[in-house]
Length: 84
Image (tube, rainbow, N blue to C red):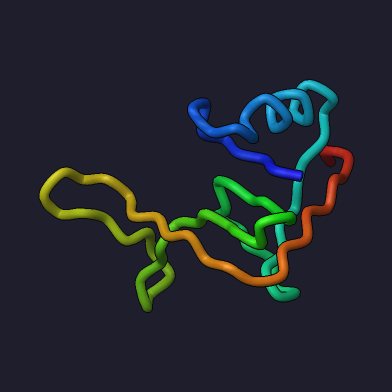
């Protein structure tokens, strides 16, 4: 399964359907929950997530102000749950 909050990504449609059914996806990489994941693909073993600073803040490009992201690989688990 692939889920993504990026409308240009192949997983966007499934993410929208999930939200429409009042569900959320919790993403885990190697057993650790990824709180700031914007894409997860359990078949490819990839997660796109926000880069955090050592202080736990979002890392930003000082020239354009964009929040940095990275793609990390490992064992990906996507858990679908009812929205609380």
